[in-house]
Image (tube, rainbow, N blue to C red):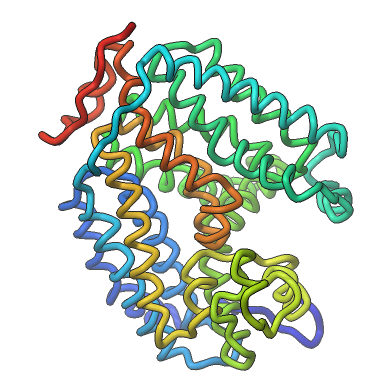
Amino acid sequence: MTDTFPGAVAFDRSHVLAAILSVSVFAPVVLLFAYAGFSFGYIVSFSFFTMIAGYLWLIPFSMLPYDHRLAYISIIVSGLLFILPSLFITSPARRLPLLSASAFDRLLSLMLLVGATVAAVGALYNFTPVGLSEIYKYRAVLDFPAPLRYALGTTSNALLPFAFAGFLERRSFGRAGIALLILLLLYPVTLTKQTLFAPFWLLYLAVLSTWAPPRLATILSLLLPMLAGILVFFTTQAGLFPLGIGSLYVGTVNSRMIAMPSVALEVYNSFFSGHPLTHFCQINLLKPLMSCPYDEPLSVIMSKAYPFGAFNASLFATEGIASVGPIYAPLSALGCGLIIALANRLSSGLPPRLVLVSSGLIVQALLNVPLSTNLLSNGALLLFVLWYAAPDLIAATGGKQRNKLEPQPAQARTTLSAG
């Protein structure tokens, strides 16, 4: 931290009890997860539940000036209004005639071709295989054309993860491996940590969802890496684990993946308590149609206001706090929850492993990027459409995976026979 900026939060043992009490008010929401069935909304809601609980823990240690009481009430109500529709609106959407199983299989192969093409075109603009410590230096000068930038986001976050999950259900392990390889090749193109770790994360989700029921797999997908980071931290402190590897793991998983989305709520609350709200003008589609107090992306604005670097944030911080302020943020959260509920309806009846694995990167992006950006730039909208068209994909497996993980609801989709 700089001499003039002490930091967003500062740990003080005297505030631990206040932090525990702060989290305990929101903690009973976890009971909803015991009652709700598995869905895409279940995955997203559990991640956001963890993020909100983390922010509630941080509030007593806050070093930033804003109305902490208002922010506290706002985020709890926002969390509830998001989680309720995301968990419990899961009825299947009315289906139109879909592709045959064989046609969908060809579509999956086409996804590999598209992914390889996007990676190859991206490599013409940048291909810099450097270590993690150097990516920021080279990434700062990247300048992809807008269509390619959108294609890279959609391919890495939605298209290739869906292709991997689809081939996994079809037991086409060779082509599933190719999807992961293409995803890994996007790292020297985009120079993001997510593309480097994405293949390993998807493999982790695939193994976890194969051996654990889907709701448990969802919880463990976050809990196990976090517990591993805690173990690595203490063993590193004791000199029993290599410092470099330990710092990389804890910094990437416990800090960047788990803690920073909570810290983002702290930073956005502070900034927009003293600056004009955006009223959604940060959304690229709306920016030309309305006046906006900011000429730069919010992440750049945050990097200039706070010494944390470019700081993107979730829908609670952007579509909520930044756009409408903490008083109306719960209404924004409700609207976002209804969008996730629509995704539940489009994916209703699909094998849980397919939903969990194919959404593995989108869920991570939702914790760090606005919902609007994920829908339009990161391929979430495309992923929802693919889910809607996906039932025929499962036909060639004879439904073997469908019952392996968890019994499906009575309204589960009818699949066509292969061929």
